[in-house]
Image (tube, rainbow over all chains, first blue to last red; front, side, top):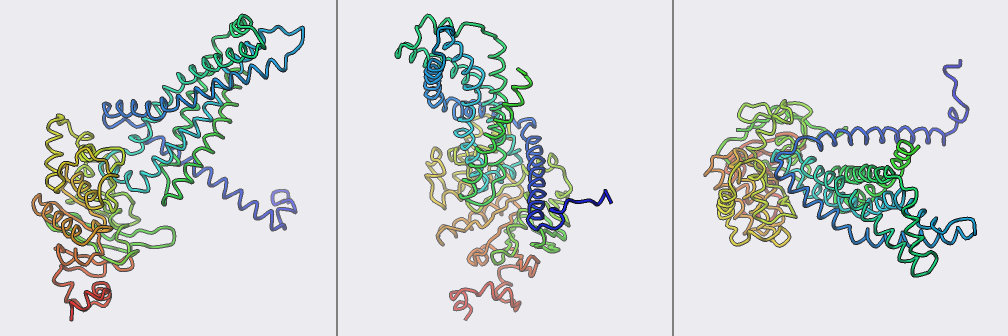
Length: 273
Length: 248
């Protein structure tokens, strides 16, 4: 009796049956995607055909994916730093809170969260869509088939250099982003007069824990892996034509962003919790 | 020689190929013909291993390709050249880099040797002074010829061409057909061509396999196909007004 018990709404309600069906399809789809992603990664992390070609590809991808994003990262970082300083100054008006708090808060916000996470989310949009559409187009125009026919491990040839380039270079981009964020904050502090240069510099040097930089870099590398591998996955399994390439690109950005947010929570709990 | 033995392939409940057994001879242009959707491309993809067969086997000179692991297949794949319908040239590479790609990947040749080989292959397909162009700067016919150059760069033993004449004018089409036929005889390659172009069938059809509803319906050559009384073949061959007039 207990074994066969089902709540009434599951037994009789048509909507609940539909929900059950959708959930089972969704869970099957999730497992299918996880399995397919894992098998793709197995092929991606195989030994490259020729190390010389792989090294060359990595440098090309560093230039295309990472250095090509310098402009947008610089602009976002400077303005992000400036806004943090203004908002902090606005919120701490009071005789008991020292003015160097503005610099301290700006540094903490930029190092711990804004630069690694926000910049990675922006890169998920820029780099992720590029990777997915590039590989997706190669798939629908049979260029990936051409690689396979030649005996080239296409997953390894196309995705591994991108993963390697971003995992290695993005931490440097984030260090630059933190630096530019602090510069932006300092500039706005001096320009608006909310805090003096002395207090700002004192703030950004106060209570500094070097591990926090390490934490930011670890996060960035993990996020870079998520962006490149998830986008590569969506591009690699594109089927159809231009419409599907666009859909893959959108999926790549959406799933990368969601996974970045989830990984952010997990890593923060593991490293700082 | 390539041999397909009792190949079957389905997608879900839809059976695309059913017990297809066919042999493709060395030094001959072997044509696979049939209506759109008859299973020609699926057969070719099964032959080269882009799709796995559900049943049956594919033999490359008696080497069982279907039962090989991915790494073992690599050896055979380096003996295969393939011309895709759209050319499938790598967009980001120049013509020279495209043809040089398999040489870079699988040989230890010096740069000068590779350049010589590239120039030889490009000359063979009548592409001159286009080494530094990218695929977007090429015409449809040029793309196909560069793709042929890339396919023969590694001196393949097997050449697959998926609808080499699609999207190009009749004159260029004949040039491409003749080029493939010449290369096949010159290098004694086993060539398999998917086509529904009757000009190709008549011009270069040394061996012809007609696929109908996923089955091997008829085998013969370019003389026999014009005289057969097989209804499905005649419906296919004499589908156009021009062919009907020629028959009369």
